[in-house]
Image (tube, rainbow, N blue to C red):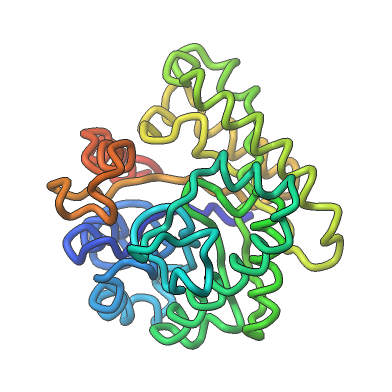
Length: 297
């Protein structure tokens, strides 16, 4: 089995991206990180990609696309994707609004506009890392890709760009392991339990339409403890979930967020308070410390 130790959000700023790769022993840092995914919509993606390129080209770390439809500037214009993009060129829709559109008369239009935006994001990633056309790895900001209309647009965009999908994150995280471990259970918020259940249900809606097109999903962990994944080492929890995935014959993905930004002004959308608080959280360093510690032996 493969243990994917992953960090989202690569590319917001160069310093933040360096902090992420500093948690990879393979890339000259210290830690278990072996995979990351890029926010190609960031104005700083180009310089961040140049920094990561030697490591990616040498196969020292996996690089994927962190599809973004919610925060900061879009690659499509407001005229190309008016459901997604405001007049200021910034993404304008919440998860709830996109889910509402996905279930109503605007679904087909939403899918087509997502398709256009994701195509642009795939092209931006491939411009930096052309070898990924044959081994594309995909996840998304706030797991928007499990919204059914978005999922359809994503799959169409991957086909349009002639990519081979190597890995697609399916954040249908099992909740039982968290609730059965006392020290871990105390860290799981009610909000994250709701998100967990919603994403599990959405995956059941998305999967049947693509019976032969999706790679086998890894067992995913990183939602119930989102923002405080340093607690996965408590009570042998990490050993337990790895053993469970191994018994099921599945890879496992552990999602961390080790790289923060020092100020609101450096965030992609400074007016979005929730995002900024997440990027500036002290838990970023705690998760980075956990990446240095786990698998140390």
